[in-house]
Length: 115
Image 1 (cartoon, one colour):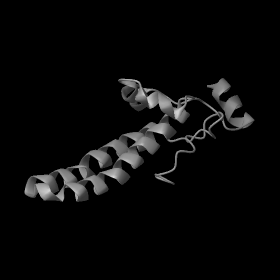
Image 2: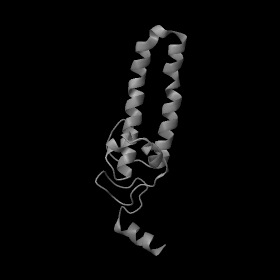
Image 3: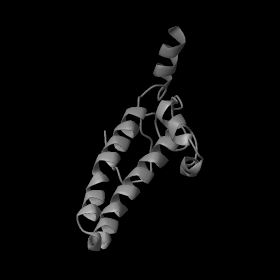
Image 4: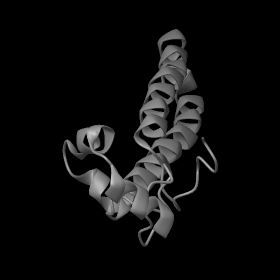
C-alpha cells in the first residue's frame, strides 16, 4: 500500500484511496493553523499545500484507472464518491493489473466462475 503515492501511473484500491483522503484532510489542517497564527505566513502555507494537492490528485488518478477511466474523470462533480464506493475493474486493464489480484490470471478467472 502507498507505493509511489505521487505517481500518476497504476491502480489503487478503494481502501488506499479512502486513507489518502483522510491523510490529506488531516495534513491540510497544518497550513490552515499557520495562517490563523500569522497571516504573513501565507507563502509558507501555499508551499506546504502544493505537495498535498499533488498527492491527492495522483491518488485520484490511480483510483480512476482502477475503475477503467482516465484520471481526468476525477474532475466530474461527485465522481469522488463513485471512486470511493464503486468497485474496480476485474483483471488487468490498460492501466495495469488489478491491485486486489482478482482476475489477473486465467486461474483466477476460473476460480471466479466456480463460485
